[in-house]
Image (cartoon, rainbow over all chains, first blue to last red; front, side):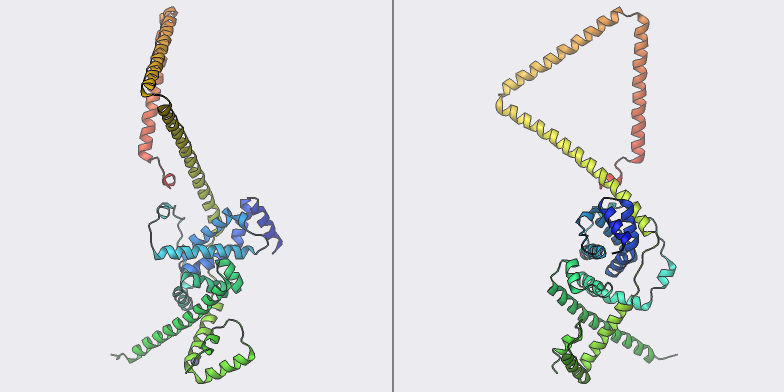
Length: 197
Length: 182
Ligand SMILES: [Zn+2]
């Protein structure tokens, strides 16, 4: 861990808000990316990433300085996103959500929307076929190079559970990929066969 | 055709031992099914590896700091509300306790009698205070009396005005803001 980060962490542990803001600045990208891959929506990802840092700030005393801060943060983010997905599946009108203040207006960035390549869309669709916990395991494994043990610690699962989840997810992703490819091929064939006037 | 254990090996994350790798290779040469799956998984893994990391809109950390301020305010208000509620609850409990205590330790007639006694004492006290002021006023010149009444009346007017103003403001703004209901 680099020196300024150690200092920010120490100052954050003593309640220094400025120091924590520096940590937010430093880790915003990996946290946001995880939330985005989990939730598949830019605005939901922003909310989830903000919430992740708020929770980390509130519970900074629970952070074990012997471990990686990034791992701790990503674990908070993953748990939060898994919970969000569960809530989304059973939508309950939470009074808290209704009364929550709206974020400052954010116009969608045309540049970024345009850069949503087809491949990224396909990636997102593939990931959405997994359940939240499997998805988070796959994301942590392939985007963040977490080992199976690290994933197990981050998601509060046993190492063997992570192993079987990852295995099942790889299989599911491959099957989905084949199904998508077959559907795309079928569509192309149909277009070719359609009579031209 | 028996696809196991080769099909499972396809999805292994760690490199296979040389002997197993050779067996898998041989199976893939004769099994289009497993070959197709392997190709699919390798494609997915490639997609996962090359996918660009998404980044938040600029200003993420300043938005976080602004949010922190708002959340802290909300927390403080919640704490104040909880304190007030706890205090009110404690007072109510004490009163209830006293009521029960009196109801258990003294008969209803005693309670009634002591209530009458206390209220009589209070009334007598009030009358005495009134008499005191009346006798005081008798010694003052009449001009002072008028001035005192004037000051008293204007204070009442100011208070009424302030009350009307605050009622008007509350009715316009709606006092319990949404954070307070939160
Ligand atoms: Zn096979």
